[in-house]
Every structure is written in C-alpha cells, then in structure tokens.
Figure 1 (cartoon, rainbow, N blue to C red):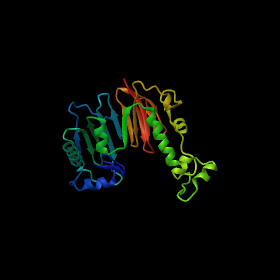
Figure 2 (cartoon, helix red, strand yellow):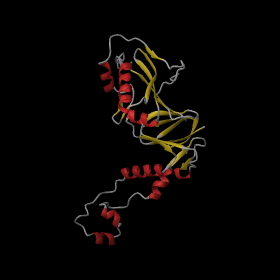
Figure 3 (cartoon, rainbow, N blue to C red):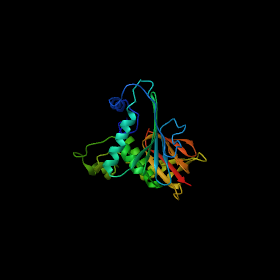
Figure 4 (tube, rainbow, N blue to C red):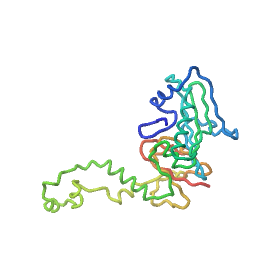
Length: 263
C-alpha cells in the first residue's frame, strides 16, 4: 500500500511509495483508464482527496495526485495498486476492496477504491479513526486526553519526601501518589472544552448538549475531505473545516470530529 504520511497508508501520495512504483514502470507515458461497470464516473470533477460515506456502509475513497512537479514516471502505478488490493483481499479472505475507477494521464492519476465497510477502509489505510453512533463522552474523553498531553505541570519524585507534610501544605494526596505537583485536568474542564460548531447556525455548542438521535460521528486524524452521500453535516470541531452541507475537510492537525446524519 502506498504511504501518504508516517502514520497511515494512502494511495498515490508519497515520494517513498513512488520510488517503489517506479520499479514497476515501463518506458513512455500512455493514458490508462478504468471506468465503472455502469459507465458513470465516480470521480467526476473531484480534484482533491475525498472519502464518501454512504448509508449502506460502503465507503468510496478517491485519491488525486499530480506528479508533474517531480517528473515521476507513474506508468506502473495501476499495476501496483491492483497488487495491493489483491493482496489485502486475499489476506482477509473476501473481496473487501474493489478498484472501481482509474484515470492516468501523463503525470497525474485519480483512483477510486470502493470498500465494503468503514472498517476495511481504516484497516487498509492504517488509520487512527472511528465511525460510530454519536457519543458525547467519546469527545469529552478525547479532549481530556489532549488537555493532559498539553499540561506542563512539573513532575516530582515523591519517593524521598514526606507525603504527610506535603499534604498538610495543601497538595492533593492523589496527585502526590502519582508523582505530580499540582492538579489534574478535571472532568468539568474537559466537558466545558468539548465543543462543536453547528453547521447550520455556525454557533459553538457543547458536545454534551447535542441530541444524539440519528446522529453518526466520525473521529479521525486523517487529512481528507469527507463527503456524506444522501445525508448532511450537523456539527464539526476545530480540527475540521466546513466545505458545504455534505462535506467537511479533516485538517490532519489533530483529531477531527464530524457529526452527521443520513437522510
């Protein structure tokens, strides 16, 4: 599989992967094209990496890349992708991934892969991501972990100190037992910080105030456009950018939360 970053595998995106692809390449650059069975293009005019989520669970990943700036020969790219897809399907024992459309023209390529479910998409691409019914507690827990990671409270070695004296001086016994000088991130502060933007009103709301009825939630560190087929975006957090009522860009700058519903 082709790498896009150190933490995940994405199609046709990283020079290291392209180096592998070049080894499959022949001479010359001929246009290659694979069309969907019904002849209707899935890629269409899409020009940025996009993942489409559908009510039936099918995930369509569209990867777009222009290699003209580095002069890379991609004439062996389709063969490489075919092999990666075939190897994965054989590994899991069923056809989880299908190459449904491929367009290669000189130094650019667009690929559409279809996955039977979101789990296969995440596994194939080695993504730290989760798709589930809306659960505000997951967002609160995520924010709490982020706040703890940002906490610069100094650590102390309490093995040779008098815990009773420090406790009398006002330090929390639990913090002392954990070797931390100062307080921990409270549940209240994490809950207060767990906010989302309403896609319609653009107002900031607390995650715990969102009505979970018929809501789906995507948590991801991926950098890609997520498009909701037959649905609409309801809320998103600060690591996501609203594109339109069906699409949100996950920036890859942290864990993005996208809340949506299918019609």
